[in-house]
Length: 108
Ligand code: SF4
Ligand code: SF4
Image (tube, rainbow, N blue to C red; front, top):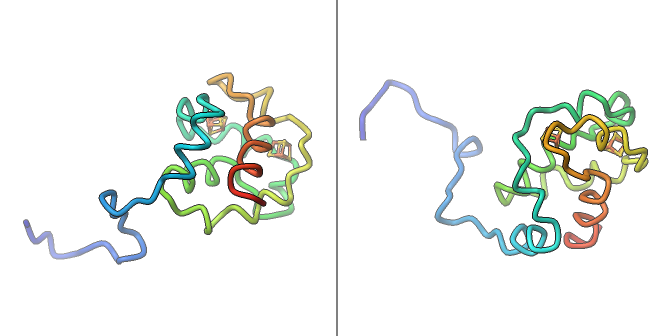
């Protein structure tokens, strides 16, 4: 391996080979659109709850894809299911429905 004189800290390193993504696969089976997310952040920018809480839907989806759901799942409890994120998503993801499916699959 090339030594660049710096290295990623373990907490910033993603061990893809060790990913346990069973729950994410389960989510993708019932909500295939989750794979369309391009992490643009429009949902997060439009979220009213996000102005006052830790809720960040973009971050939640990324953490699910990376098998690090424990980092963000609790924040979904602040979601009011208002649907604003649904309106702005450029990929046409039904984010409101996705949030409900995440709660079901990850049991929150
Ligand atoms: S549905 Fe939830 S995540 Fe989406 S904008 Fe409303 S409060 Fe935010
Ligand atoms: S607006 Fe849609 S594509 Fe963009 S981060 Fe949110 S869910 Fe993903």
